[in-house]
Image 1 (cartoon, each protein chain N blue to C red):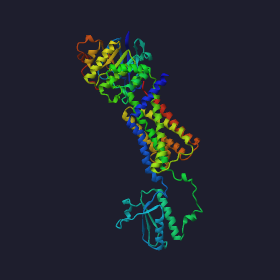
Image 2 (image 1 turned 180 degrees about the horizontal axis):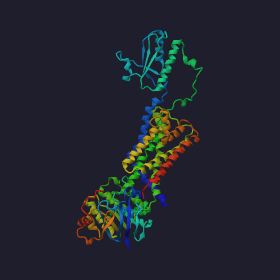
Image 3 (image 1 turned 30 degrees about the horizontal axis):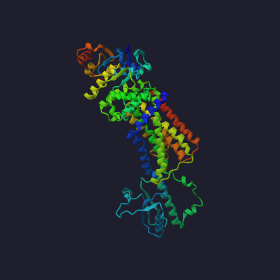
Image 4 (image 1 turned 180 degrees about the vertical axis):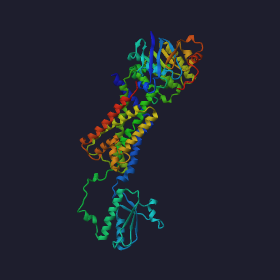
Length: 247
Length: 374
């Protein structure tokens, strides 16, 4: 069974009226398809503005109004039960800075409908996984960038998801924290969690992922095994071009 | 059950975030308290008893020095309204008010006793009209006494006109206006932290997380509105407590609660709904954090200026008094004044509360139409 299967997905931030006023609709995703095998770490690569974050938002139920279809663990989406099997660490630090790590975990645990006992047990586990046990009672605003990134990941793991969506999980962190995050992801994957990893760090994708989907201007450029690619960065530039993506 | 637990947790989270933000606490509680104290002191003169509560620095030039002129000068000096000030002999009389030492100049000219020349009054151009009328009235009375040889004109006039206003209703204390005014003003400022909170969650991905957990968007919205509504009510209770029980002792200015104190409950509940509605509206109108602060602060200040917070409504021109009615702060302020000063029946306050309720509903409706979380 596929952990995630997307076929013919299109999405635009433009309203239908824009078609008339600006002469056409600009698509963030256009007839996009990909699939993620269960138990894999799958890289989602693409230049800035390629549509990676849009895709994450659609899969996590934040954006609606797309065409095409997608399935999570065999369930046609949108499906609330299947949605709860997704863990998500957005690109931004999606935490409440004035709260402590434990308060954040308790809040998101209640939102995920975990019992108080489950929250307590899972909080201890995810804090240990991310190396934050000793800092559990500190305000997140007092955390370093790397600690915040790790807590961002810890919250995504709190409700024991089967599919983990990570949008640039190591951006802005030091090599130590980055290394710790890699180790954690490998451990999680070996425990059976499927991971879709969106990143700009080619070395990261090459090191962790068995499969890769390359996305540009909302379309699939490449979808296949990482082992078929000798030099990922070179391959990426060949496929997407060397021109700057400032728009 | 799940919804109730989630709602409780969102409310708790919002409260914690708010209470840990020192700037928000300063903005919502200390700013209005400071304004109540400072503005009460500033307005003290405006609401003071024009006859007994202030002495006006006055220069008296007696050019006549006749017995009648001296008697008039003596009577003026005995009046409680007047405080004589002497200016240096070389000072230019035409520029007397430029130095800021005197506000009134009284000249008793030669020929005054023959009735050929009138007593001359000069006022500082920025002198309050109320005081001007009081000085003019006092001078008229004293001059008539001296010229006509009457001992006390008030005793004679007292048989013709007498004032029967209840003593406690005599002059409204500035506290009566500033306490509700700045409490309402502060309540409208809730729009700033409220809209910033909404926008931050939208931008930083925490909302994205909540949707992954299938939290109902209405629960999220309600969970964010309830704490701000509660804070609004706490704000008013605190302002009222300080205004009614502490400020009178500190400032020496009385505060009366009115005869129908229970009317404060429905009035405050409705005003808090209007202020929270305004906050939600700003949260959905603004696209950036800068916009939220600008829209919320400018909106609150404009509504406050129009609604009689900065300049009392009765001081405004007729056109401005009419224009004030477009500001929800006007209706909120008048509702409180109905309770505190006018001892109004609930039926009198009800139409004002209906206007505020409509404003709140309109804000919530527009915000609901604009919200684009999904």
